[in-house]
Image 1 (cartoon, rainbow, N blue to C red):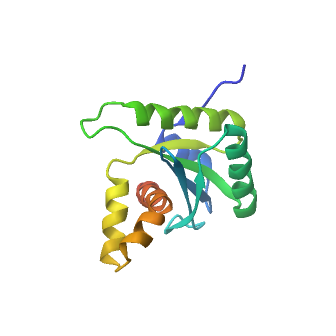
Image 2: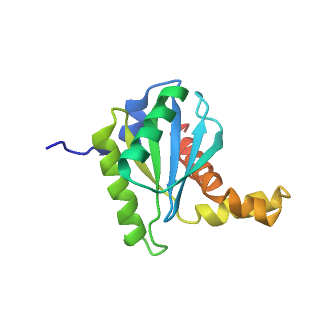
Image 3: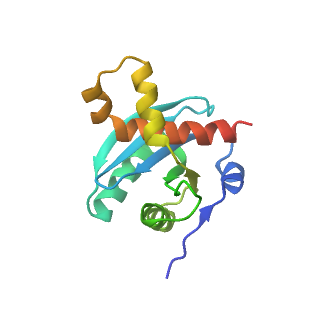
Length: 156
């Protein structure tokens, strides 16, 4: 039986090396948002939204993104409750991280994503994006928000 290996953010930093593009994932209930950052870990950019489906379909899509973009690590948003406890959504994100770490060879870590959806929504509002556009792109924008928080930490 394969074992999983979800790295702490500091272990992740050591394992990704320099000039590493990262993939950020916002594991929502119905959809999953994806974002990429540049090799210098400066800017996270929304990539796409994938409807949740069977794991083998998801892993195939993630492997394709990794290969096409030379991704060196994955950051998965961890929706910890506001009081710091682990709820159903956080457990689901952790389960996803475990499955990914077993099925791919690049480092996987989790990043506290409390308020990422709200932060993403507010940011796009400040940029003048209309409401229907904000809602339709929310998951991939949340993934970029999560990834940006992680790369800001990693760049310190």
